[in-house]
Length: 261
Image 1: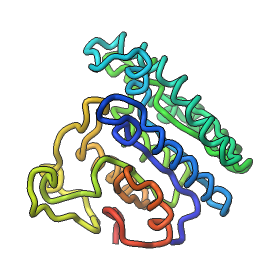
Image 2: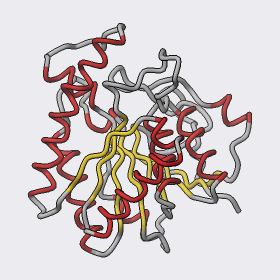
Image 3: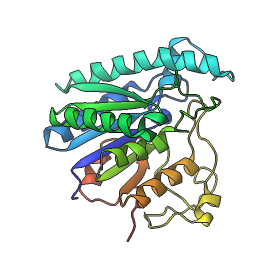
Image 4: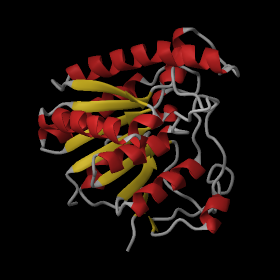
């Protein structure tokens, strides 16, 4: 409830429907809620996935290609369309947005990291919501010089660390962290609070999610670990219920709350 600077990370599964079409209602609702928070004095940063998924939609492809070059091309095509959608949706609520595309070397190299911090600070002071994505058209982990974050869950945590955010809200395709897969087991129990990332939790975590995304529960635990090390907090919740963001900020028990006691 004390959070004022908040990073929202939304995954591909919340932006792309199972049939590969763009989830326009979710993007519109996200724009409404974040604009409303900004109007109420919160500093909001959006970390978005979805460039490759949107690129697949633009080119009417139903399968993510295996080769890196085509994935880069899809990311380049999809990023333009994704930002166009965000700009249109946020404009409906009189909210200005900006775009930052990051690679890992930007946050690792002190001078470029300081430049990124300064840019984000200036944008927030102007009541503009920065929209951040990895520069997937450039960042490839096959390069000798590692430029890729690995996934946008980790990027969300690094951005939260970069801006010293009070809270990271991670929107996924699941209600929170469970002791087993809730889509398979009816008796799966959700963890309401996590205070430490243990080996047992990591073993519990599954693989990647939808065919349009790259993350999984393991990457969310890794993101939480980054925040724990920096004394920050995270809530993992379902991106199908975006309006609950305001209830989470108000202190309601929704999803899984990660914080060190």
